[in-house]
Length: 343
Image (cartoon, rainbow, N blue to C red; front, top):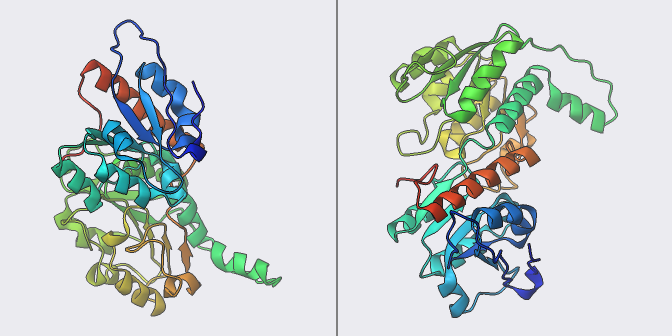
């Protein structure tokens, strides 16, 4: 595997051999230099002859390079480094782009619909971070019940401030959304003595906990102590947890959002927390990201704020990259792609 030098703005590399059963590609992949350094050996093995154009740290690609790009991958490092806008500007400018793979599970941003409208096939690594996000969810539930935030504040102030805790054992947790994340949360929580129930659009009996259709959401909220929001975002789920829904939770209840910020009415949540109608919340996602520095959520003593990192672990990245490598092989062989986005 040849080194891709991001300082050159656009590096090119790729295997030159041809394995039996594979065709040599005449395609060029747009990706980050860091992602290619980490995963490129697997990509070269899946698609011998693939050429690489590294996303430049600054500036633009010339028209000839843009015209060569037919494949693109949006990896986690592009999101964390703040290069997402530059990546998608280039993707939207590449006239021959045919396929985009995204490490993230959520494909609700309008840019994906626009690319699909232009004929670009879009796939994602849905499920690759489900285990990590489920572990983070359990951490948040424990942290809320065990007053982790006020204890951390007391430690930072060198104050000895004993507090009473709540038991996680014996609580009822409602999971809104039983995709890969919700299912993993539902699998883990009973080990803590938690009763788990779920809500999803169309229960089919395969769920790991008693699960009810969306029409029963209010009934199940009345039974719940805590709600975990892990649904995908679309026009039917936007604002699914609003002022009315929050009012159905008990004052000792908690809200954990690891889905999308727009699933919850943030203003209504702030009001409920401020008025003591909810005991606390742990939020990894927000309606606008980054969360504004003047948002009251930052300073609320009963709120845990994390910057959309619930699934960001080395194993999650490896799993996401493996989905792309598998799809790359499928692309070479002309087979159906996994996790294809249908706008």
